Length: 509
Image (cartoon, rainbow, N blue to C red):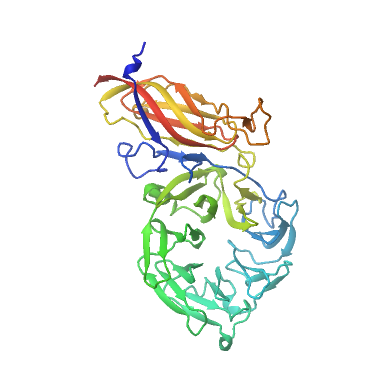
């Protein structure tokens, strides 16, 4: 019988996120060697992500092939706009059918859009790199911009009551802007004009009273209010943005994908007070593996979670092969995780009546999905994985006989997850105990949903714990031990908050 007086406890919080740039020997206990479909939680711990569900029950109509990607999704008023094939369609939010709004377009590979209001009327303008920019009013009547110099624009931004167009294949270094308060008027005598930079433009983004111009190898900032005082200032001539669809306003900054990973533009209103920094060193290997082979990039922001998601899509791959990275700002630090099973061809995040709406169009099946909705990926299990570093408890030369693992987690309903202990770096001859089922037990009930003295697998038990502790007796021994949690993927999310491991010391090797 074990001598409990000699049991050694070691506890750690789940914090630090996915770390792939340090050996398991140099990692902190709370960091993760694997973190798939778990998100670093701003309230602490690692939370199994929510799922996605159909936002419109009908498939966006295809033109030539049922495997065509959705080229655009955009929330606009009470509607959602979607492009597929050679047409643009609309549906009501949560509707069951699509209405054609603009058909017979020349095929394009990617749409981008800008919502704006110059004269008290809400509008949205769409560009696709091939056709003339198309403007939709609040009634979804479509009008093409007639100016030939902006036909085929890829990028667009509304800034200081002007519409800025860029990315035309024949003028890749030129930005054309409209006259004030009119996205389809280009008389230089009335305030329209053009600006040329010395690099290929890859994206435009308005931020902090400036228009940031991202190029392949440079970044510029445009300030001023009219054609008479617009001025270009270089932010850097040493780094650029490889894909404009990765640019997002995030945590009071701009984030984008550079050639060496994710970067931020930390700026203030003062000219020159701008810093550039790489933030994704912990997961740089994921970017290195995908930058050269990805056929397209997409990104989105979930503001109430201070979370940025970037996706790498490869044409023709299975949905669960598409990779994504979650970036969460916690305090002054960034924590990361990996996403598998979401395959966006386009995205949009929109706040309506205080509700954050996160949408993506699928790469091949024609559906529009709402993320942060449901407990699975539209009926497909969410395969969540967590693995701790290999823990030696500061002495890799002494065998540890494991006695118990205490798991501190916060379930949102019943869960389906297993705990594994893996010894000695998961070598072939090390002990491999069977899985231990995590049991949410008496989770906390929501007021008004559960009758006193009763329980429910859905909503919990009156007086139940909101952060239960699972005390699990375990087996096995080794010089190092790692914890794994595998999620079954079809129950509600939960957060892994921390662990306590209890062990007895054995012989020194």
